[in-house]
Length: 151
Image (cartoon, rainbow, N blue to C red; front, top):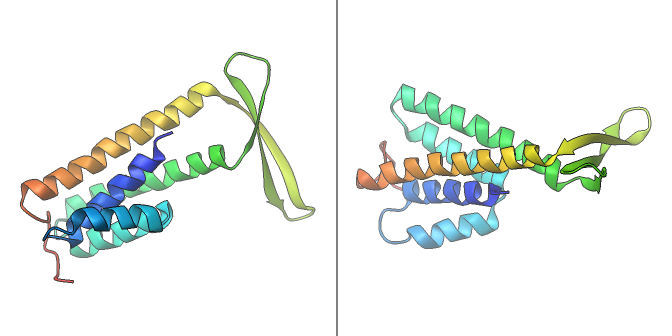
């Protein structure tokens, strides 16, 4: 689907914000492996917003983070569901167990077209590209796009 590439770019951005002297790759790899997408998104947002001095850049980054979180929810809806073909080309029934206040657990189902999956994958690709631009801006400036406190 591509969410792992978004996860990796967030780790790369965190690494570029924190590491200036050759440890970039090992930090990036450790973050990608050890921290969930939600955690890495939170960490990246906290680091960026606490160190960025440009209000417009902060707002742009907040919007980007909202899109990452929205896409994560869509991805979770795909990954954590049971799938059955409907018999129609490219159409599936998505089943998911959900919390139900009266019965404890309920089974919810909905039709899901393959084109919806492709849309999510395309959105992951676009987010990955945008996150890569943040990292590239950081490298072009020889460091962070904002003042980073020594860790």
